[in-house]
Length: 296
Image 1 (cartoon, one colour):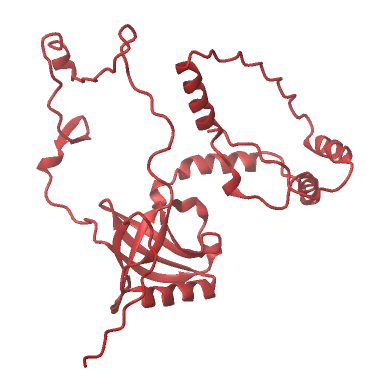
Image 2: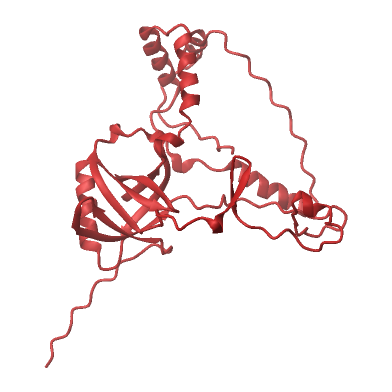
């Protein structure tokens, strides 16, 4: 009698398929771990979308576009310009289709180059977060790598080609997410360093705050603020208000008039304002304050 084959366990997987990728080490072709990644923040906002409609007939308008030359014939032309993709260079247009075949096509690979301390990479470079999970059949290798990163508390850093652009990628273990996350990072030249330099120059040009005063100010801020913050509690107040307002107007319910908000008095001396605020606190905080919904 033939021995029965052992059935492989079934693992729950995300509803989204994600992008199929391979994790490898720079200069080491022996390591290849199949995994998938999907953005943690959907590309859509989740809000209601406005459409162009005819003010008279309340019918949706199908937009048409013309260049200036075609616009002169727009009254008789029932279509739009024939659109083509092009890049502008010194006043001239170079058609995208005329360009030679370029490299840096998406290669579905994440090549790791280094293991670094978390503090060595400033979050200002982080662009987008992705969740990572193993490809079917790659669970053992993937879990070993994930456990190694979690145990070390460090970041794995490498590169990947995404949408024809080579991106630096930071891979880390997230205790809150309970899994590995990957952060695509902006190139250094893409950062608005000129703006940052102007801000830094403005700080340097002003009188510097005394260190003891800064410590006292932080202590006063800390006395009036909570010691923890849960980002998952923040809601998009604008989206909720928009849906309610649209539903009310569609049902013929007029929106109530909004009362004007009282203008806040400018702070002339922050330290005096902080000290006065702390003096009005009757007792230390024992529980978190209710969160105000975040406006967009």
